Length: 123
Image 1 (cartoon, rainbow, N blue to C red):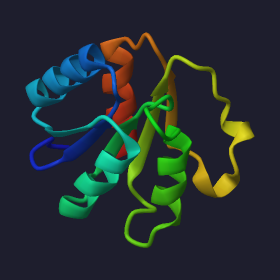
Image 2: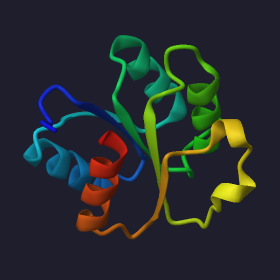
Image 3: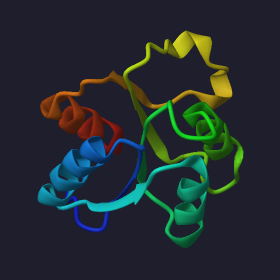
């Protein structure tokens, strides 16, 4: 699968993480869009529907699970691939069935693991 025209929204408030993810995504040929809060992510999604979202859970003002819930319950967004990337433990079975992410990765993230998760989600 070609990465051309695949848009990935990175939702994370840590500048270093954002820089690393943005660099990696662009080097792989993805279009990277950045948001530091849930509100910014929703604004970005209204402009461009991403193919995938890399979502941190601990964000300013709102928890990333609120954005995941919005994505999974909004017509036209429910099939967006979501990879949760968080330093905090979260178990898939603790989430309601209708708001589960496609993948959960723990920080610190290894780039090969991220590459594999993205490739698997898009295949």
